[in-house]
Image (cartoon, rainbow, N blue to C red; front, top):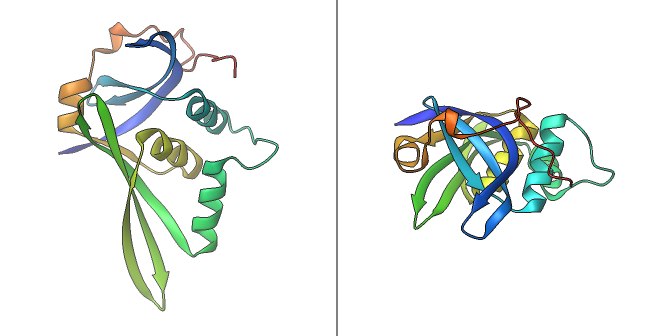
Length: 153
């Protein structure tokens, strides 16, 4: 089963590599799913959440613009698997050509999928399996009250 998720924030967490690792926090099924991301991905997500344009298009902005120019749309993104500590995602899209709808599914890193979803305001969904394995109670996370911590990016 899939559950709608919201991006609660992007901050700094502690991973196997130590402290200071960027993390995106997804809320699904009243739990928080932390996904560690790169500094660049975190910056891209923060800019999208703040609605701040970058002086030049970032990769996610370019992809969204290209998809639109090709007459397609991104419908939703999914975080649908977790294996050996690695999250997996998909981007569901559609394109209309000659009055026919073509559905497309693209494998994606969850960080890319989330950064794109933030730009096009489409749903993010997370499967039960992912929440069961990675979900944590919200009180385990100190979000500093703002929902997004400044990563100094």
